[in-house]
Length: 134
Image 1 (tube, one colour):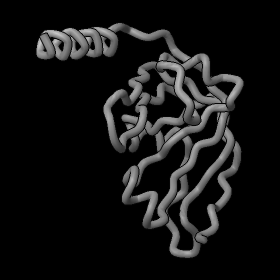
Image 2: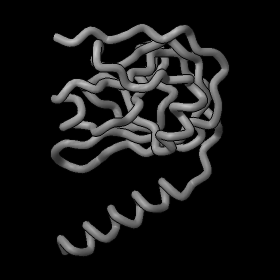
Image 3: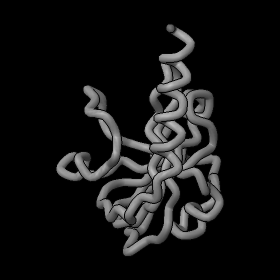
Image 4: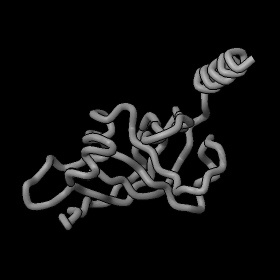
């Protein structure tokens, strides 16, 4: 019985991921953090936190935590968002942006992990600000 429920949940998760998603336009803040703790937790990735009023646009279960995700196409996201290269005098970059994503995958497992999305395009992006090291 437990195996059947696990298989059913796995197939539902796969079919949900396989469903084509319409593009989603989001306003918010991208961050690319290079401090030791961030690198340990999420790696050297560019992530995005949509404005709270837009959390409902994301195909994810209602949750008690803030909505944010990292880009599955990280190299392309860096290029499209014009993320500056890493510098020794700061701990990353952040900037406001309006983006379009077309694939969103919520992280539904237990433990550490994060939602992922594919960045389709950037409508606009502000000049990046350096993130000060603490």
